[in-house]
Structure formats: structure tokens, C-alpha cells
Image (tube, rainbow, N blue to C red; front, side, top):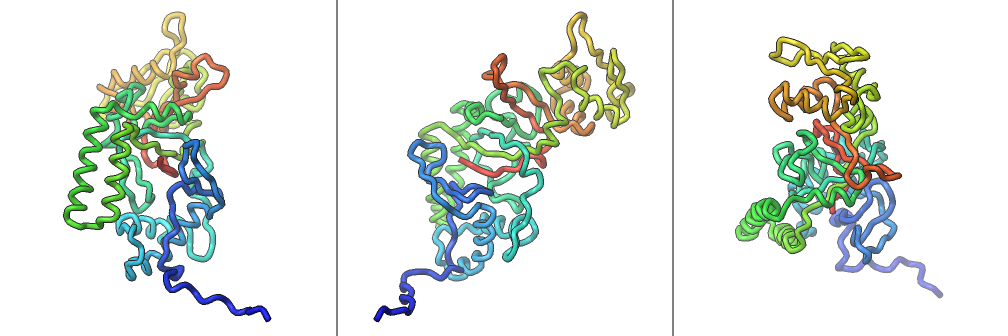
Length: 334
């Protein structure tokens, strides 16, 4: 007669509350996981979405910390994941939460030499305005908290030159080798050192997938279009107390200024564009940083412009300069 009893549990198998679900390659909201994202050798398999897996890991974190069963346990990352999932930022233990605010916006990309540290809001990290300006282009289209690209290939070209990348990688390498020498979380330190060595060998840096809300994109200054075709910008100026006429705009008086900033909508026979408006304000206020803060105060959250590969092409893709890091939510990292 067949034995209907369950087979005894393997002595080597850990209970569920002492195991961590791997997060690398896992889609945030869709049920799959990739082994090598972006590679021709990639294999995709069914898996719980990242928001659910992250919540499960938050539940099991205390057990894994107490037992020492997880050799990859990183207290900093686990604390950030726990805070996001259990303290209101992610999912509860028994019911699904709605997607994060703005998660239905456009997915764009950011190339950087920096591996952002985890925060209480996001285990993948957040944009640090102090590191902006060290990448490709040196803020050629205005100062912002982040440069983002609609085309993934464009973002890959935003990795900085090897000298800048090497300096950033050297600092990171020193940090992790010091931790390894002190036997401070050696497993995680060894993993980070291996990742850095690969990045340094390939000079690739990191590629971040970012959620940018559609409502913010709609309010951005279009670098390429004539001002006469940018009604959202005109509305923001009027909403802040400025004046909009058919021949000229009078932007609100800057803090510490004496007069409004006047911008004519025509430069001789040519219409004024978003680029000229930004440059005019930058010149008036003494620099791009002050100009971006001024536009941010007018509820204009950034700049959008066509990338070089799509100018004149049938399918246009854009880049974005975002003034406020709060509008950028990192949802993936390669």
C-alpha cells in the first residue's frame, strides 16, 4: 500500500522564516526573474514580483538575523527593506498594497559610476544631488538632481569618462576592502568587491531603471519647442503670479530681485524656444543652479529634450533633467 505520509523534512533545509528570497533580476511588479538581465545568455523564470518578495524578506529578516542562517545578511540593506515594507512604504504581511505613487509613469534610465546606498525609502537607493554633474555632458542641458534617458542605449552612454569612474570606484573599493580587513560583514564585502572589480574591468558603471511620473513630464520645459506652443509652462508662470502675453512673458520677480524677468516670444524672425528661456533666466540669476531652483519654485519640475539619436527621426525619444530628486523612484539596477 502506498505511503500517504509526508516525507520527513531534510535536516539541511532551513525553515521558511530563516530563508531569504533572492532579489537580483526580479521584476518589481511582474511575476518573473532574470538570471542575466540584458544579456543574450539571460534565462527568465516564473517568480514572485519584487514588491511581494521584498515584503516576505522583511517578515523573515528578524529570524535570519537571530539565527545567522543567511550568509548574505546585510543589516543596512535589511533595515531599509524592513522600514519600506513594514512601516508603510511597501506591503503589509497579509495584504497587498497599491503600487508606489507615480509607479505608473514612464520608465526611464540613468547611467552612473555610483552604486547608490540603500535608504529607508528604497533598498536600491535614491538620487544624491551632490553627485550630479560628474557624468557625461557635465549638465549641458541645465542643472538638475538627475539626468534620465527614455532610451536605454542613451543612458548607457552617460557613464562618465574612465578617470572619473576610476576615482569613484577607488573610493568604493577602499571602503569595502577596509570592511573586509576588519572582518566587518565579510561575505557582503567580498561580494561588493567582486562586483566592483567586474565594473572596473569593463568600465561600465551602473544602469538604473527609474520611474518618472507622467504628471511631472507634462509640466516640464520643452527645450526644443517654441514658447508659444508650451501652454503648461505659461500656466505655471501665471499660477506663480507672472504675466503671459502674446508678444512677451513676464516671469515673477526672483527672490532678492527688483523686477520681473521679461522674455520676448520672438527673436527677430525666429520664435524663442525653451532652451533660450532657460538660458535667459540662467544669465539673469547668475548660473544654471539658480535657474533650476527658480523654475522648480514655479512648479516646473524639469527640462525635456530630444536625444541626439532621434532628432529628425520618425520615432522620437527624449532625455530629462529633473530638478527635484523626489520625482525619481529607482525601481531597478544593472
